[in-house]
Amino acid sequence: MNKKLNTVFFILGATLFNVLTAVVCFLLFSFIYIKFIYSSAPEQSSSWAFSFIFLAAIVVSFIVYRYLLKYLMTKVDVEKYFDPLFVRKKFKKPGS
Image (cartoon, rainbow, N blue to C red; front, side):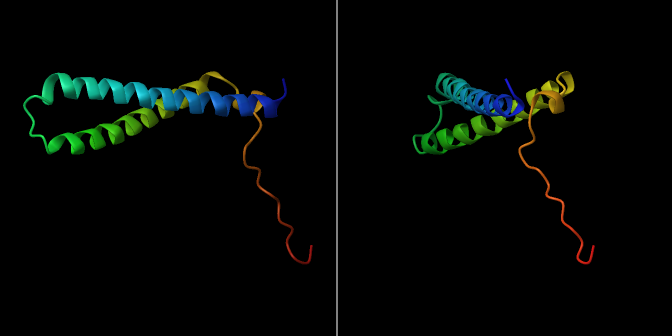
């Protein structure tokens, strides 16, 4: 496989991992809320609680993704296996 294909597969896999982590966090936080807090909380707070749970799941999944990506970058030579996503264009100076 070439570098571009490795990069595409890595991006797809990392995105899938991030989404699955967010779903697992959402289900876990929802279970904890329903099991321990829901019965004693007022009814009006349930809509706010699930909004907060949704945001917390996204934040936690992003943090997990970020730390795992940093760990992976220390173990794998990124330049050897992956193509850069953004390449800087060299600008010519006027008059050169």
